[in-house]
Length: 244
Ligand SMILES: C[S@@+](CC[C@H](N)C(=O)[O-])C[C@H]1O[C@@H](n2cnc3c(N)ncnc32)[C@H](O)[C@@H]1O
Image (cartoon, rainbow, N blue to C red; front, side):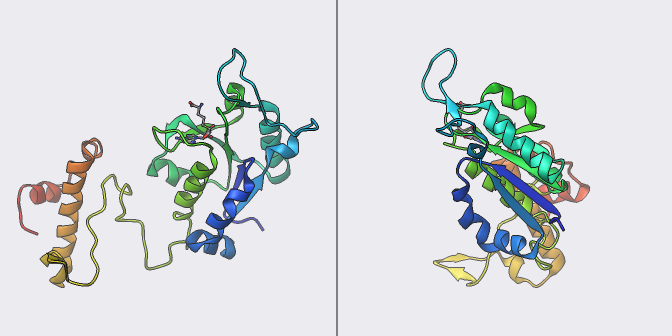
């Protein structure tokens, strides 16, 4: 039986994935059968003696471009042998990855992540995928690290992966806000003390303190996010100076 989510990765460096997929939450999710990751090497779909996956760019210029034939053949092989899937190319020109996209992808049964290398894919590959995602406004040497980030973020959303105690409800970006500050023991560290409401044992006070910190932190650090948060009456009261 298939795992609730199977992620196929099309990559010329499948060996990069072993340690990330075997450690911690991802390792346990795979062991429990909640997540499956299958690696497909486009070199296995080349037809020339050198198994070449890249070629010089038309029009000249530095670097090499990934050839469309092995990439598309690998994609088609995954779909033909394993079933329909949402196909995603990782590239710096894609839509920036957000928690909303992560949540949407976690509801899919099967994904294919296509990793580029060199100067990226031949432009025509874009027509064979459903969407293009970017990790942000910077350039990586290849799509493999981006694919691992996508898999990690999605895996946390799968049922049972975080365990019963942990829940992503209050986490940063879950409801449009950044998370409140977290503290653990000791109550005083090099003269810096844990905020008093957290030590009060009063659950309602703690809840209101956390909500206010979340609002303040988001307003200060991410005004772009704050502008989109629908504030409740309580939020306005907290921000208006009411003591939690
Ligand atoms: C060196 S990059 C190619 C960059 C490309 N020449 C450009 O300027 O847009 C090689 C590969 O790394 C991956 N990559 C680089 N930056 C990325 C990012 N910000 N998000 C996702 N993937 C990225 C993509 O798969 C890309 O095809």
